[in-house]
Image (cartoon, rainbow, N blue to C red):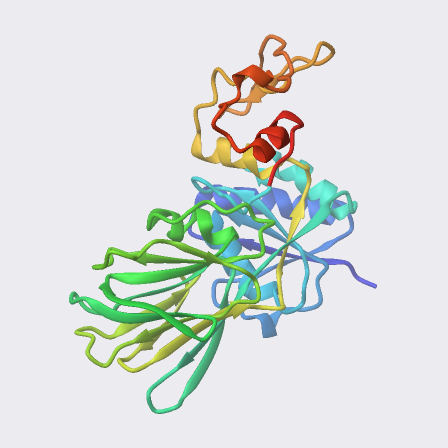
Length: 331
């Protein structure tokens, strides 16, 4: 049986073309037939493949997810963009990354996706999905009037520039720019973030995986809406339409080469300042921090914190709570 690997790249960049050539050479050396797709390819155009090698930024990975989500093959992202949260490897490591995935030396991380259902006033229904987010924004320069519903109950209505509904994966994308929280990717939840809302209560929301989020574009809205899924697929949402967001049963599968925690990825991608962190060092292993540049800084041993002395507790605390704190109890 012929082994095949899909190669998806950002064809408009010379760096991507060079990286593609290197990836193709490594695939052929491993006895794997590379299948290079063009910009207009669809999932129906693909032969059977065992993995996808994606060369580009997060946008290219989202395009590859469109092609492969239904067949469930893992995606190996090689970052050629700026941030590249979804990518596993960097440009200089493309050869080694391809060698490892062709040898089966990787794990698979499943990322939750959301199902999107749009019902127009005439009853017409359109379905879509997203790995990062589904963003409903005003289609004109005027304000968008919406009503928000959670689990079949109305929550609030207000005017706004739009609303972003996102997965944990998408919490560092459009939702983050709109002021939403960063959610660790192993949290099976959904996020709703209003954009420039004219309301006292218009805070970001995080709901569970069994919830249903709904947004209705009100008849009185000065502007109609425009729904964009993962920044790629657009749908007009006229006044009187209803958009429903639920958890999709079909994930996107990412190939992982290292078990680095999301915290490390977050620090590196955003170049967060962590100098001075001591951690919970022991006498046998010094505390370390991974700085934004990717190098490790070894810090002096930090004593493990012990329980707070009883005398340091606030005597006004309830005796039961006070006793629980003394013994290390928690909620």
